[in-house]
Image (cartoon, rainbow, N blue to C red; front, top):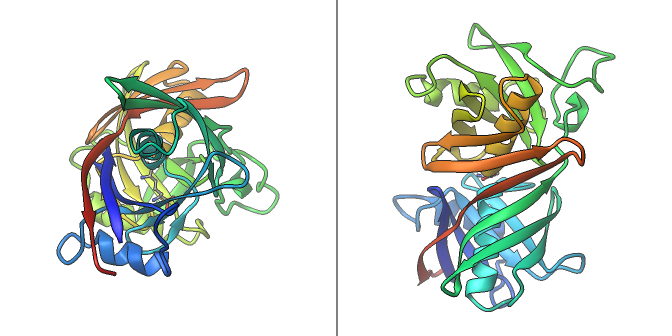
Length: 281
Ligand SMILES: N[C@@H](CCC[C@H](N)C(=O)O)C(=O)O
């Protein structure tokens, strides 16, 4: 199988061009290639496929083989791949995902895509659309600074769907927290029937928020595009920030804007190719 290793701020995936390749069992292939000792090493697998509804389709799998509806860093890399490898000559493209069709604007520098702005669509705020289990009668309500007990401690969570499920928790000390212990406890918590991606965030000022992420199916990653959008939406909802936010992740910064009138979230950030390779599956 021919592949390309790419990353968005260190959130790395193995990309396969499914216009040319067939992946028989993507979930197993994702586990195999993601292993950092016995595989290629990545946070998961992303397949770039033909689509009947958009210019391309992105199918993404986490490192544990589970399917993700959306991937913010991944979709920017898909934009870079299809342009740099000549699958399109357009700089405005649409990509079908399980989380809906997303629209990308490619910023081309010296013939190659350097960064991508993505229309990420509407954030989902109702408990039932994330989904987060709430008391009866509160399924349609937003989940804003709502208490949750995890490993004997009470946290205030804000829930956001960016096509995939997120919960944002504000902490005083993001860099020093025990994410390896708390992250999985959130991911597996009974109130998240589809498991969850958890962002641990701290507001630095009204335009800047730092975060670390524990991703469903992949553990801690260097960055999460949908997670950064969820953090921005949560911070704006809580009136911690303005509508344009720089989200500072371990791998670098993403620029997020929530157009409140149109109710659309935009994410802008880099996409990087590491190398092309071939692996026996
Ligand atoms: N890293 C991604 C999100 C990948 C999917 C996520 N782990 C899930 O299962 O929902 C991003 O950049 O958004």
